[in-house]
Image 1 (spheres, rainbow, N blue to C red):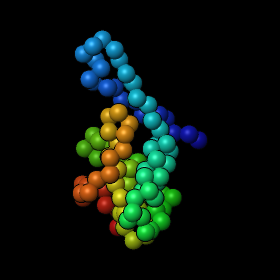
Image 2 (image 1 turned 45 degrees about the vertical axis):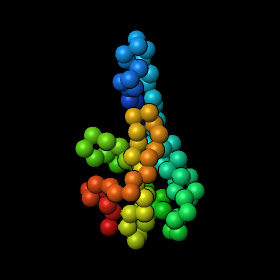
Image 3 (image 1 turned 90 degrees about the vertical axis):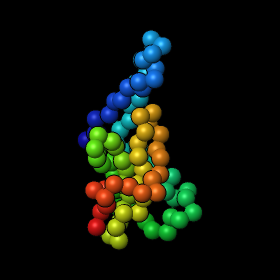
Image 4 (image 1 turned 180 degrees about the vertical axis):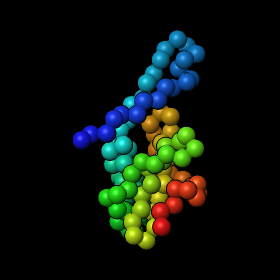
Length: 95
């Protein structure tokens, strides 16, 4: 069963009278995070299929991990773009 899309509002657009809604679903951003991970030069390990979107302190992240632990974390920005984090909240670590 597909997961519900998450909707966010671009607050910058509210000032000029336009409302922009960015929709994304968990499967889409997880797929994009996998693609970004494999394009990076330090992608030595295979992430688990259980990797996916996690929420922490009101922000959304894609956590890629395997049996060895967390491999990479991407924050999902308000515009739907992914940003790879060098340091991430301790609560997102998978042991």
